[in-house]
Length: 194
Image (tube, rainbow, N blue to C red; front, top):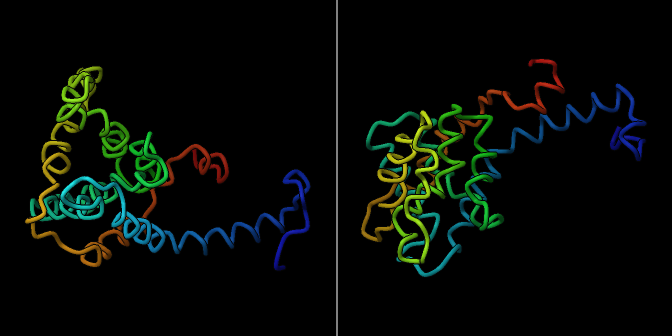
């Protein structure tokens, strides 16, 4: 079967959905390549800084790798700004959604909110409140998000920093992305693993 016969999902058969599931499994095998290509696209992103967004992400991931952070943390830092191209007004949420099946809930939460935590370093220069992050002051991962931005985000705009290449991180990304946790609602509902 090359394509399914139905034009409305409600008309699909068990066999057609089994076929589509097979195709989805194959499609998911290419996710790491698509993520790495999206990261390469950040090379031409957001001018004005001394470095491009890809180099910013590589600096953060390199710092994390050299600090002995876990593979999940390294990949989280590497991909934390992957949403910049398509979601400039909500890049944190987009990056978090991409990472969610592959990283711990804490890392998902940190990336989802890192844009607010990063504001600490610049909002007061733009008429904003640098302490907006304090709305999460009582959250169990507040300090983790502060540390994430301090150690692996705000300080990663240095054109002299000797970052590792995206190719260096590729095996780490492949390891992390090859082991989804499948804790999202859609997957649980679809496969009955709730």
